Image 1 (tube, rainbow, N blue to C red):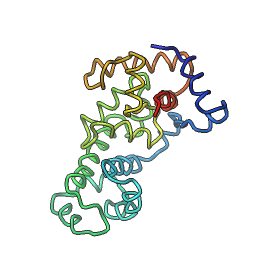
Image 2 (cartoon, rainbow, N blue to C red):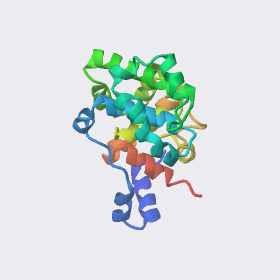
Image 3 (spheres, rainbow, N blue to C red):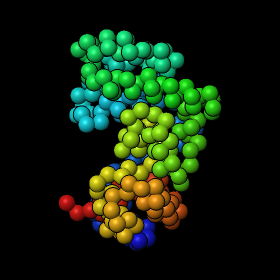
Length: 223
């Protein structure tokens, strides 16, 4: 595995200048900023991620005001009470994306938010306090306790709310294989641990957040 210095120099050449590179890279939110986000906004973003999966994002985003309305502003205590009949009625609402599996995921994820509130005081606390050195552990937590949050959905949700994470896109996986961190797309816990360890090392060398390292790494793959 090459060190951070190589990655930085490669990206400087790719972008042409340090200023151009810095302007392109994402900025994560601080733990205090993440804690300040209300849990209804986390639930809204969880739902938005589930509905975006496999669909054109602009199509989903254009319909989102109607989703905010029918799901009571994503207040988890109200959403969790929505039963099968209520969801069947929403299947007739032409303003929405009428996908029953995805509609059912909203009250199920509201239950996860409420369960975390009982344990930690807020869902925001879970997100804010989770150590980025084990960010894959947070992906697994969300996939296990939530609904329709497997695959790339958990890391993409975290990126949407501003939690520092890398995202295992095809380009990033190709870069990690080229760096001999892994030899195939990581599906096992062992492979994910290798990826996390590589990011932790680059993070320690550079002080850069994982999201920036992730984007830089993806740009080392030639198209």
